[in-house]
Length: 363
Image (cartoon, rainbow, N blue to C red):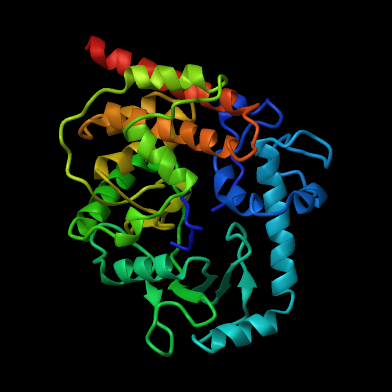
């Protein structure tokens, strides 16, 4: 839940699918979130940016072609440097946060939090970049009953707001390890319970005007695809559009639009925790299909999809989740990113989805 977009979807992480582990420089699946920041830099600042190897076989140099992958890596390094520049004096940060919240213990920066997330004791502190959305999400989580799932809870400032005057929010720390394929049978009921609790939430007004590459990709995955698509992406896009079919009317509601194994925490004896809430207005079945994409299709594992087979319109939800991911790459390619490795990344999940649907149609 410690995710603040600009506004955008999907924490930064390098992910190499098992089927592509031997391919140097394979595109990272969550590059886009950090590219939002890096693309705002001037060309001169970007040219001066260096990067460090991240993940298996990943490396880049100042003079290499500017690909989506290298943007991802450059962004990680830039964010780290930026974080170091404004957070080198922890005592200053502590004073800033302490103006609005109690701090129990020493403040430590957390990895994977874009350099803006800190922990002290059992409290997480986050410097928000979108105060309006952060306040909205905090209010939603504050009122949500935890029945069959766990969530972090927001903590109010001393002056009864969700975000401090200097942009800090505070959340309870939730325990657990990252979910895996082995956890799917306990995760699915938790996701259903989570969205059942969200079902009465009204449509968030800010979604109507939110216009990011993620939102454009999501809309195109459900509606009309872009008029022009890079020829390298066209084969997989065409394959998914061929598989995409109209669906029966499914109720839409507030959903978590970025459910993946890193946004679900498992702790023995208690329900799974759901974090990093990214709001979208879609059928709750789509949220389950997004998770199925990452646990099954993306990993090249069709067997895991069977656990989701009873989800209404699952096949079509899965097609749209894959199409959205490809179109996110397309959206960022229009802003200067290369698609050199994107086709390699998407070929396997698209093939798995096609085989899954063909197999189901034969039954």
